[in-house]
Image 1 (cartoon, rainbow, N blue to C red):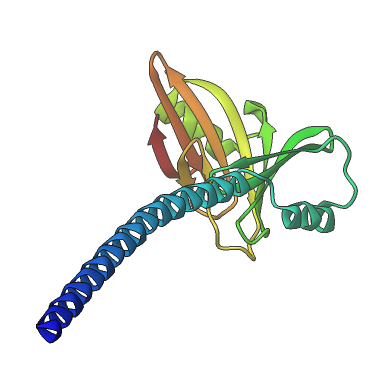
Image 2 (cartoon, one colour):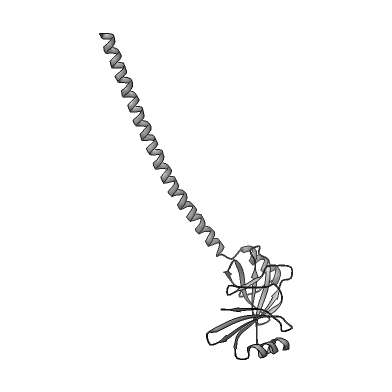
Length: 194
């Protein structure tokens, strides 16, 4: 009888221990699931913060572009820098003209633009404007001097222009605004409506 009682007590103890272990296992699994969920939230937050840092860095002018500018143009005073469409842009005066130098993501000069007057356009470009756009008003003329050793294209107002020396002419007629890319010999290389 004592043996049976002892066996029953042992069996009961084993079952109790087994149930306690199962409860501990279940509790540990719950804790692991909770930690995994917290880890997922932390990883998401970490990813978002890293993306924010990356976006902020994209909006900063690259110091290598500034160094390359100095190598390209020497010491120039009153330079202002901006970051536009993944391009670093230096605004400065050269030969008493407002000039912009555009640098690509590798800090290499894409080219420069200089503001021009109607009278500074080559005669063939003036003729093209008169023949095809006489009823438009010229609002701005830029001369784009391409860096021939860099194949990157210039982007102005969200429009990409091929990499060759040209005049970029902004025209308006009422609500119609256009950008023309005109070669030095007066050919229209591209036309964009805004």
